[in-house]
Each structure stands twice: as C-alpha cells, then as structure tokens.
Length: 415
Image (tube, rainbow, N blue to C red; front, top):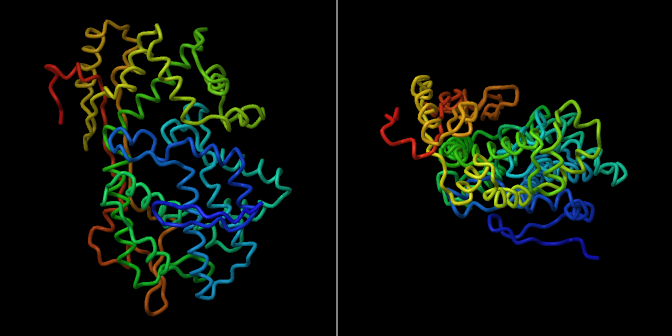
C-alpha cells in the first residue's frame, strides 16, 4: 500500500505525509476522531465558515514543522532524520487529547483534566501500540529532549501550533486581521545556544503576528456571542449531569453517558482505563445529537437551553472593562426568577457572569528571542520599536454577564 499520500489543504496547497509511520498514526482512530471535532467550537454561529476541524489543524501544523526543520537545517542546526520525524509526530499529536467542541468543554466532562494531559495519555497508548516508536516524539513533546528548540517549535509563544491556527482560523472565519506572514517567520528562524531565535530582519513579521493574535482573540475566540454559545453548551452539560445525579436518565451515546453518570476527576481518571477508552470515542457528534434530542425533554431548564442553542436564540451577553455591579446582577436574577417562574436555586442557568483574561504576549521563560545584528539576543519586547508591544504583554481582563434577551425589557444596561 502506498503511504506517501498528498493532501490538498485550502490554506497551504499540497501537504505531503512524509513517512509510512506518520501515515499509520494518522489512520489510527485516536487521530481520525479529530475529523469530528471543530477547531473553534461554536464560532460558526458568528462566522459561518468556521467549520474546520482539529484534524485539518494538526496536519497544517505538521506541514509547517517540515518547513521549519528545512530552514533550520539550511542554517546549520543539527537535526537528525529521527529527530525530524519525532518533531513532526509531536506537533501532529499535540491536540490529540482535545474533547468535543475543543476548549469549550475542557474540564467539564472530566473535572480538572486538561487536553494536554489527555494528549500525553493517548501518546503513551500509541507508543505502546507502535513498540516505542514515539519515545523521541514524547521526549520533545514533554521538553525532555536536549535540543530545546525542537520543543519550542511544538509549544512556545511562537510555535507552529499558533502559526497554523492563526492562519487557518483567519482563513475560515474571513477575519483578515488574523492573517500572518507564517512563511517569512519560518524563514527567519535560527538556533542559538540550543534555543529558537528569530533573526532581526524578521522582527516586523513577529510584531504583526502578536497583534494578529490579539485581534483574533477579541474578534473571534472571545467574541461575546461565541462566549454566550459556549457557556450555554457548558450549562447544558452541567444540567444533564445534575439530572443524572438525581436519578433521571437521558438520551446519550454510551461514552457520553459514562461521563454524565460518573463523577470522574483528575485523581481517578488514570486509575481506570475505561475512562480514556470512553473519552477517545467522544466527539462533537455525541454532544450535538444529545442536545438536539434534549431540546424536547420534559425538564424545562434542559429543554430551554437546548432548544435555544439549536435555534441560535442565544443569551444576550455584555462585556465590560470594569467589574460588574453586584446589584445589577442580583436585579437580573430576581427578574429571571419572576419572569420564568423558576426556583431561586436554578437561577444560575439563566443569569451568569464570567471573567475573561487574555494577553497577546507573556513575558516568561519561553520568550520570543530576537537575534540582533551584533549577535546579541534580546526579548522581542525589548528589541521592538513598536511602542505598544509592552502593552500587548499586559493581561487584559473583561467581565461578562449573560442572560435571556427577554430580561432586557426595562432592565437598565450597564454598557
């Protein structure tokens, strides 16, 4: 069987699968599951084109890794063929542990278990299946390989994961502000003292990358309507778990029911292999089929949330730069209790608040380093002459409140 396949990608054109081993990993059910998990969750409710998947993103990131390795080798970086394949595998599998609707439901189905931990567990399983062939990839993934720059290409503030999702998400949403010069950034990469650096002449492309990331977060990922839809989905699963806890069974696929019925935490997740087996069978279709069915359930809260989400009758959401007035939120809750005739204990399904935090660049140990003309190394925030780059490193906090539009009425807005 010919395993040297070529895939036509709408963002980069033709992508080659570089080896038979990588082809076999892509064919594994763990990876094929990513075809059915949307990259940007509920964002398609705002940007209808945003229906691309984690599968596409992982292949795109692998393609960029191949370009990066080629560039670094041309500049004298010592990367063996085994290390190249391992780096390709590490970036290919970096998101394999994502659950349904990506980040939206993280920590919801399984409390305190991140997609990074799940990715590591799945890579361990695959390594056993492939008789240790992922050893080097796992070393790179976990930053235990001596060539630190390989891990920085997989996970860092200028990694190929971010480069692909910004390029891909801006392409599919149509948000031009997210377009970055990924090809120029890769061409400007170099290695100094075993760390990834960007040559000084690429500094403007990095500045554009950071600004694009900031704009994409506020315009796409943290768009108030997206936040509303994602939180409604989270509340739906919270209510479903509550009903199961009260002895009420619901329509659900066997694997979804496993997580609704059982209280699974970070502590007990790894104790029972069935948890990972069930998780590896979950994707967006499990959640979506349940939500469609629950829209007709007799429980009024579950029915209301599901039917509104399916019809895109989303909660009204306001974002504010200062902390919300508690009296305003309390007034909304009082109105919700009266308007919907609900018990006060159930009001959190009708009115809720969120704290949103984001920064485009974090000044940490994994800084973006610039190789200056004199051979010195500077942090991008220091090397850049862009006056607001330091501002991009500050954590921006916004406060959100969501509630049914019916409550707008005579309720004063605090916009």
